[in-house]
Image (cartoon, rainbow, N blue to C red; front, top):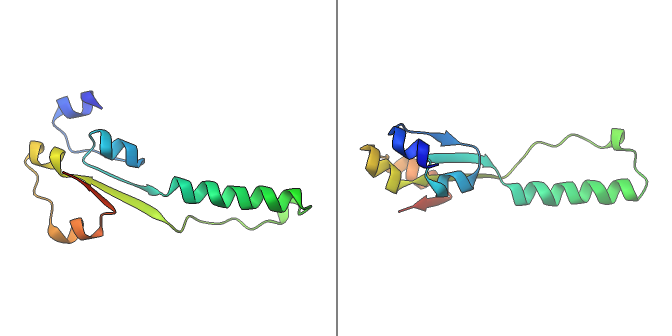
Length: 91
């Protein structure tokens, strides 16, 4: 992430860790929730259900991280409405 900070460009990534490490924002499905769903799929398969018979599920829980420290360094004013949607704000 140091290269991103040195470029002085606003960046958005797909993993919350990237937002915490220096990207302006990150938005992604909640990985822990995805792992829980994967575990339930494995349990169903072990009980004998064919994998092809299982429905495809879309993610239902997402994580939005805004890094205000980076926003200030780039001279970007983050609107309060956007901050209200964030699950985590890095200050």
